Image (cartoon, rainbow, N blue to C red):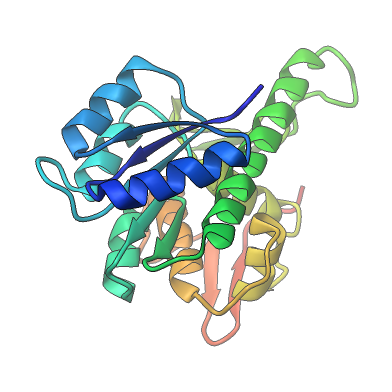
Amino acid sequence: MAHTILIIEDDISIIEMLSNYLTKEGFHVTSALDGEDGITKFRQDHYDLIVVDIMMPKLDGIEVIKIIRESSLIPILIMSAKDNDIDKAIGLGFGADDYIAKPFSMIEITARIKASIRRTTQYAALSNNSSSDSGSESSSPQLINLDHLTIDLNNYSVTKQGEELKLTAKESEILKLFLNNPNRVFTKAQIYGFVWNEEYYGDENVINVHIRRLREKLEDNPSEPKYIKTLWGIGYKWEGHTP
């Protein structure tokens, strides 16, 4: 079954270029020329990934991401002519999964789309397998209780004070990497390699923003984290639990 992509972009030439190339790659593509139309189409159908521009009429890309994240963890790829750290941080901070700057090559954006869908598919499959096999001893819940947190590594679920947290696939993978390797220091390149399964090109913002988002969800005081510790100039590690 072909994966479905929603492209939200106000430049018709970019939509046509992307649609034609992705269709040849086997994707089913739907497009919207502004943020409001993009939200409407998102709510009307199912998609496997959304590509969204930052600068658009009616609703900009950031507002689109915020609205989508209220109800969905679908992978979101930002594309924008603005290639600077502030734009990346803002977009990723509101829930986007990846960022690509214009002009981009069709090979690169297609590779990023495929990688994002693959990670999400693998994440869903692991969660479904854990749920369907919950009666077996090997897949029994691996529960970790930390203060107000309850983390089930097998089912990729986290609750805080009894309320389930909405973690994206990447946030869940980073958390699982840390919990399976407590007190081990990971460089940003290592985290990127393990979670993204791609070569790291030194884009620290991607890691920094995902770590910040994870802290904001897990920590009682994200500015003074208890679990996800920063080792300045080196990377990050998880403290406080050994499975």
